[in-house]
Length: 251
Image 1: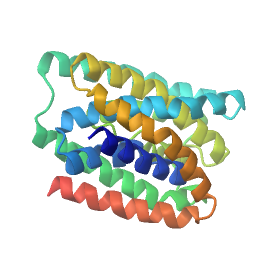
Image 2: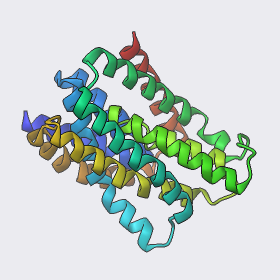
Image 3: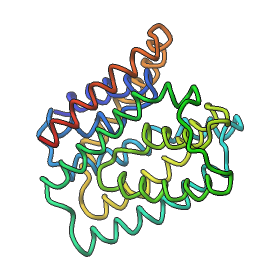
């Protein structure tokens, strides 16, 4: 099984390297449907997996000065308290049962698929929030609150959904900076949520080790392959895949 975990990490890591998304949105469904792992354990393990795999990339963005810190901090101001409150609620009220988790995860995957489908229009500035800079920051904090809760419960939403919201709120800012800001914000969020799930006993460390061993070379391989395949095609295929998986969870 450890070899299969490593192979899964390699495959998902390759997709992450090719498309820039897919950590939570693909890994959690694979663990649930492919290995029969309970949703709570799959989600908790994937949270730490996402935090660790994205840490290196976020550091690179910060060193290169690509992070839009006001945007990143506004997201964090909403998402971290939201994640902590969600963890406290799960500690004292208990986690949702598997059926509820599956429904929430399904809707999160559908939102991710939709966000990927409309990403090009967002990049082209065709979808705009039409708000002032001050209101954009306030909306970013609110978006962070929603993302923090969603990610803590499902492990999905910090990537494509977060970026789609930023592209709508800040259409005039460099896309690379928004991507870097989203990734930088994702790392502390997923690590805090992941360690919270570890305390709740919802993480399989044996599984996590296998996934990480495979994912790190997979991300490097995916970046190499991604240079040869149109990004537009890959993201469209991924959007269709995530939408289908989301519908399967809901049905």
